[in-house]
Amino acid sequence: MISPEDDGLEAELRALGLSLDVPTPPPADVAASVRARLEGSLPHDAPAPVRRARRRVRRWVATGVAVLVAVLLGVTPQGQAAVQRVLRFAGVELRIGDPAPVPSGVPSPLPGERRVSLREAREAVAFPVLVPAELGEPRDVRVSDGGRVVSLYWPGARLDAYDGTLSVVWRKELGPPWPDDVTVSGEPGTWIPGRHSLTYIPRQGSGTRTYDRLAAPTLIWQVDAIGYRLEGPKTFEQARRIAASLR
Amino acid sequence: MLVTRYSAVAHRTAALLGAGDEAEDVVQEAFVKAFRHLKGFRREAAFRPWLLRIVANETHTLTRARGRRADLVTKAGAQPETRVPDDPEGVAITTDRRTRLLQAVQGLPEREREAVVCRYFLQLSEAETAEVLGWPLGTVKSRTFRGLARLREEVDRDLA
Image (cartoon, rainbow over all chains, first blue to last red):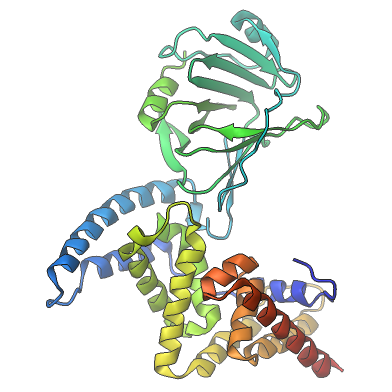
């Protein structure tokens, strides 16, 4: 991006651009105006196919508005997503934009990953290790990064519980379909319906190995200071049911 | 959802490309068109440049139809002097230089101005700029380059 003869002019232009304050009405108002236009004034002599299209649009808009409300409530406070495309929630940094390059190759294990029994896991970590009753006993249990992460495995599903939701534990890069704001057992959560790239951010000093792979649809939520990411269920309903059964 | 996510960037694009006071109108019309043509949008493509292209086209149509592009741009550009955020280190100098630079950008030929606005004010990539303005990538590069060269000349002469 920086050309050889860059004398600071490009940086200056960018700074100038940032200082230009363009008044923007509240997104909700814009959405309402757009909806009014869509539902409102098509010319009366519009041919039939156009009117059918308009009905389709109206249905589409109704769905869109429901999603809009969800998004307004959580994922994009003040509707700033267009500018601020990095969202942090429950120890997960979501980078939303164009689809990220898909990680290739065999993913390395998490730092310090070791296979343990459920009982050993409960002794090894500082937070309560809960199991979703909906899935039953996990087939495999791993503890990683000095007890920061506990991973429970079942066929087709994986639940990571991790300590410390204030620091960034995972980074996810994704494009469309966009994440949805959801409620899991009364707690706020985020449902990522599409495949996306997943990176583990090690605790400082615990090495520089990167864990980078393509992740399936994932539900993220937090209970107290414990973050959870449930990966594998294909629909939010399934994921929500599993999440709600944590005991 | 789409409106929420893209409202701010759409308004910026419309205003900085010269829609001035009518940016809101342009943006609403662009969203309406986007919804109507959503079926024509390929899911795997990036939505933002696609939408911004509609915004850019709408802005173009508006400024062409009214034939008062220069006027609108000046109006949009007349605001920053009071809007530059407080900057403890030499507000006056920075503001003065920014004002000159902004005037120089406004004085660019239309195509070069559009390229500079997209690349630097909106911070779009070259590929996104190409899509938004509907130009080939090479054209984006050359017009940006020419625009920058002209700006350098202008600013240097001003400050000499």
